[in-house]
Amino acid sequence: MHIETERKFRVLSDEYKLQATESHRMTQGYIAHDAGRTVRVRISDDKAYLTIKGPSRNGLSRMEWETEIPRGDAEELMKLCFEGVIDKTRYIVPAANGRKFEVDEFYGDNEGLVMAEIELESEDETFERPEWLGREVTGDKKYYNSHLLGYPYKQWSEK
View 1 (cartoon, helix red, strand yellow):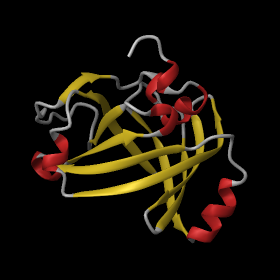
View 2: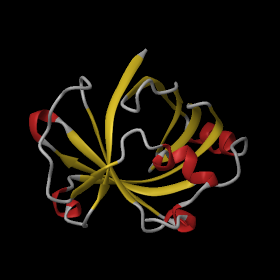
View 3: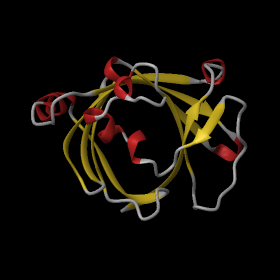
């Protein structure tokens, strides 16, 4: 099993688009999400994935298992998901030391929300912060994609 260690941030401007080396349109649905555990189906361009994530110990790290599945299977599994989908474009932005930021620009009920994540080797690993990187929201559950289904960004009073 893989332990995913990542930090999440709000994004201040669209400067990241100038630095992005690739982008992917994604839709994802949730078969299950409870007590920090999720089972997710994601379709990204012409590929599809099934992902299981465990609860976070501290907002930074959690168990993650992911496998590529046939796109047709993903489309069928989407029918089992909770109502609604997450619709976004993910931009890949290179960072120092071989790291990368994944910047998600959301659509639909989450239009206007732009988030950046960086996956790290350890919880105490340092990295360079680009100017467009805003406030850290690591561990804030309202920014979890699974949470955005029931409490979309357009309904937030404080943005």
